[in-house]
Each structure stands twice: as C-alpha cells, then as structure tokens.
Length: 86
Image 1 (cartoon, rainbow, N blue to C red):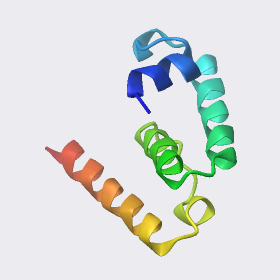
Image 2 (image 1 turned 180 degrees about the vertical axis):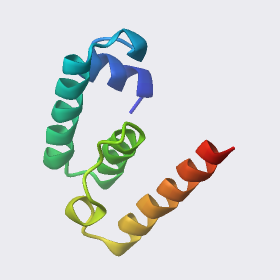
Image 3 (image 1 turned 120 degrees about the vertical axis):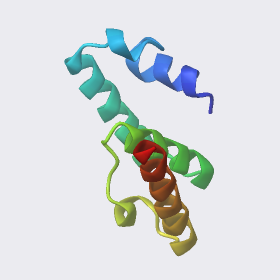
C-alpha cells in the first residue's frame, strides 16, 4: 500500500490541508469499512495504522484477533507517541 495512493483513494487528494471536514469524515468511514472487509493481515494493519494516525482507529481487540498483531499495533502506537513527543 502506497500512502499517497491511499490518500488519493479515500480523500481525493494527497494534500490533506485541502480536504473539507465532511470529506475527511467520509474518507475515514470508507477506510474503516475497507478495514472491516480486508482479510490480509498486513493490509489490515496498514489500514489500522493510517486510521490511528488520523485518530480514528477502532479498538485493537475489534480489529486484531491474533495477540502478535495486537502487540505489533501497540508497538506502533508507542513509536508514534514517542515520535510526537520529540
């Protein structure tokens, strides 16, 4: 998954500063739907990670059945939190 391609697909642009709030919410909702339909664990993680960066990620237990996947998501959350603290 290329990040710019995902932004274009869900928000119609790679320039998020130009996305109206209604379009942002609609794009995030479409992304949540696609997350729910995705069966590939790597792609599910990618969807969830992008949603997390937008503050719109569902609960880990509702997305990841496997403990290893949940732990990877927690590690990602910790890395993002540390990056934002700097």
